[in-house]
Amino acid sequence: MRNPNWSEEELILAFNLYLKTEYRKITPKNPQIIELANIIGRTAGAVSFKLSNLASLDPAVKRAGKKGHANAGKATEEIFEKFQNDREGLIYQSEKILAEREGLSLENKYEAELPEANNLVGETKERYVKTRVNQNFFRQMILTNYHSKCAVTGIDLPQLLIASHILPWAQNKAERLNPENGICLSALYDKAFDQHLISFDEDYRLILSTNLKEHCTKSYYQTHFGKLEGQEMILPDKWLPKKEFLEWHRAVIK
Image (tube, rainbow, N blue to C red):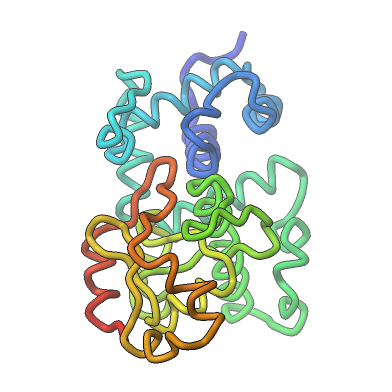
């Protein structure tokens, strides 16, 4: 008989999936939930319920007026707390456990995302693998949060979508993998956001920089920017961009 108590590894894997699952898709019929259930030897219903437990602990879910299943238990609460304190460590650990449960190494599973791995050794290689794996996870998490659509245009071609950081990856280690530090943008708007040519106000409406407005006579300006000024972003599933992060971004807009 299956132990009703979840092991720490199982909870970490459930949390991994929670971060990559839209709230409305927390259901036993979700293929990803069924897949994880098969990996850890539990029912899809049990995995779905555990993800709902995690949702009940998520401040973003509460702010949205949604509910998960309460009474998650201390062990589940501790996984959520660990994520708040060490996102990089927990996400990397979860991806490593998942790969092992799938009978793979991280290098094999993420071979396409690790083009330089074979040229590195030791700690340098370990840091490289961890960074690329975590960056890939961040992309999955942010695209899921925005229903795989550009927050400005609604473009839904994954090949054109980028998980844009509000606070740059290199400048703020603590917030690198915070889902409130990401916005899903198509390539043009990601570049404009990164260069502080566009941003979003406190009501998540698109604002344009003075530098960008200097090109207002150009046809591309009106097509891609001018007519969108003041438009509210397509809001995400759970995690809204943190207002303090956007305030920082607006402060350096050009």
